[in-house]
Image 1 (cartoon, rainbow, N blue to C red):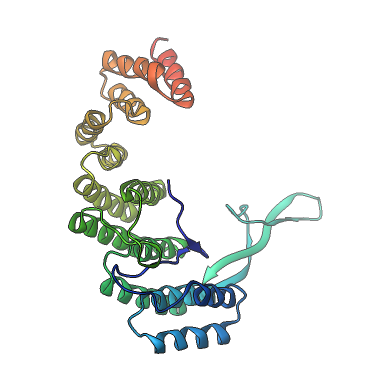
Image 2: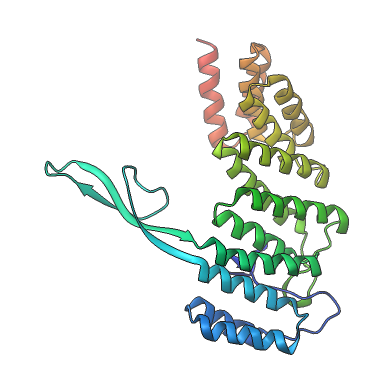
Amino acid sequence: MKSICLVMGLVSLALISGRVAAVTQQQFDSTMTLIDSSQFTEALESIHALRKADSTDPEAYVLYVNFYYKKSMQSYLRIDRERFEGDQSISIFDSLGDTVGYMGDYQGFNFDTLGIGTAILKQGIESYPDRLDMRLGLAYVSNQAGLSAEMADALNALLNQQMINDGKWLWCFSQPYAEDANELILESTQSYTFGLIQLNSPATDSLAMEISEKMMRAFPNSAYGAANLGTLYNLKGDYDSALMYFQQAYVIDPKDGIVIVNLGDLYVVRGEIAKAIEQFQLALEIGAPDQQEYAKKRLAEIRK
C-alpha cells in the first residue's frame, strides 16, 4: 500500500489538477518545522503570509489544520487504578509494597482549539472535494481526539465522494493519486470501523453499521462491509441477519479466513453442526495460521 504523506498524522498534500502550486514544497516544509517545534507565533505568521499570497491555495488549509491540531494537544497528569492502555505509566505502591494504582502523562486535546482546525479543513474539503489527503486527515484527527461521530461523518462523506468521482482522487501537489486508491480507502475505513466495533456500545455500533452499509455500495467487490455487518448483527443476537451478511461476504471472497471461521461459529450457535464442521475444515485448508489454530480448537470442542 502506498504510504500517506503524513505530518503529525495528517496528510499534507496536493492541489486541484491543472493549478500551479503557490505554496512551494520548501515553504510548506519550513512552516511544518515551525509547527512541529511548537513555534506557534512564527508558524501562524507564515501561514497567514502564504494565505495572503494566494487565498485559494489548498495547502493553506492543510497547514492550518496541522497548526491547530498540534496546538490543541495537551498533556495531563493522570492517576488511575488500572494501567493506562497504550500509555507509559509508573506504579504507585502502598506501605506494604502492593501496587495500588498508576500515574503518568495522558495525552488529551483542547477541543475548542482543535475545532478551529477541523472547521478550516472542512472548508478545504468543500472547495476541493477530491482531495483524498484532506478527507483522510479529517478522519484521523477525529479518531485521535476520540470524536467517533465526527470520524464516522468524515468516512461516510469520503465514501459518498468515492461513488461520485469513481475513485479519481488527487494527491501531493496537484498530482492525481498515481495508484489505485481503492486499497488505501478500504484499508483505512476498515481499520477505523473495526475500532468502532471493538468499542461495543449501541452508539458506536450504529456508526459502524452506517459506514459498513456505505462500504458495500461504494465497494461492492469488497467483503469488508458485509463481514462487518455480519459481526454487528451477530453481537446483537440477530443470527439470521448475521448469517445473511456473512454469506454475502463469503460469496464476494470465498478465501477470507475470518469470514469462514465466523460462519463456523455462527453455525454452532444456530445448532447447524455439520455446516460448522465444514467451515472449520475449510479454514484448516486455506486459512492463515492463526485461523487454522482456531479452527482446530473449535473442531476438537465440537467433536468431544
